Image 1 (cartoon, rainbow, N blue to C red):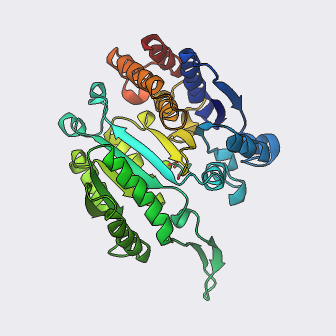
Image 2: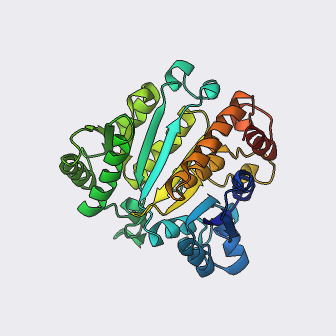
Image 3: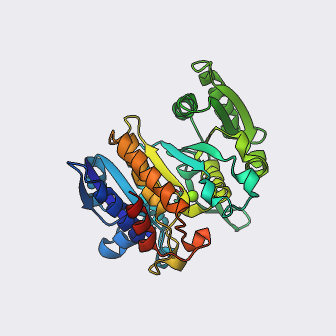
Amino acid sequence: MHIALLPGDGIGPEVIAEARRVLEALALPGMVFEEAPVGGAAYKASGHPLPQATLDLAKRADAILFGAVGDPDCDALERHLRPEQAILGLRKELALFANLRPAKLFPELADASALRPEVASQIDMVIVRELNGDVYFGEKGMRTTAEGKREGYDIMSYNEDEVCRIARVGFETAMARGRKLCSVDKANVLETSQLWRDVVIETAKEFPEVELSHMYVDNAAMQLVRNPGQFDVIVTGNLFGDILSDQASMCAGSIGMLPSASLDSNQKGLYEPIHGSAPDIAGQGKANPLATILSAAMMLRYSLGQSEAADRIETAVARALAGGARSPDLGGTMNTREMGDAVLAAL
Ligand code: IPM
Ligand code: MG
């Protein structure tokens, strides 16, 4: 169990440190960590957000635990040197096309949700987000119009193989849960989405036991706050999944709570909290480490074959919350280290 630790920027190092302590406390034989810089931290150290040595380590490791990237100091750099390119590069280079973002309300956090407790308590879904295509990776650039105006462009596209492989992950995820899959698109406006919908419908033939529905993304955003309990598994493209998963996180209490797994076709994976580097609170001990600790649990389950250890971590997090552990995002005053301590004590 060779684990690459990529803490990155902002609160990344703080939350990764707590997840590492929890993993070490499990004392699983054969678990070794190797750390490398990524994002703005790597740019400042060596001139590139995803240095070759970091990429090599990520390829060599059995699994990757990732903090966050993003640094306001780097916002004026050329795009290919910005911190965000590190996570996009890792996703692409390692063919991590399937992003699983489970959103579930811990009952103790019903008060932290932006929704009424009786609505929030229904939330138990997985957002399956495609991660290697869409407008994120299409041709992009700046040009000048005939009138001499600056114009930015980003091409959105998906081919049928890309849609089919993520649709299958969506259906398989649904088969392992409540057998309901909602495909989210914007087929009333976008050709990319029309193909998406057609291919999802074709792929559904392989999964007759799953109840498939389709929703436009604007309606999905509305339904997520109106009646989030209706969703079991959502499958959607890269951009819509980015937006809807942030929204789902606040419905489920806090963006500081949501873990994620980004998987290739062999269950190799990169695990990260869905939140960003939060430069406004970096270095102050205010970050909630639970999303990263829960990401470590997903890593044990999906990539390292240690589902019992994963259960132990998830139970410990639930117990810590039941015991009153609350960071500022959850309405409390505990710092990052104290939140980690609470999980360790429950473990
Ligand atoms: C996420 C983040 C990233 C994304 C950024 C940091 C590039 O928002 O993982 O959701 O847009 O995918
Ligand atoms: Mg995001």
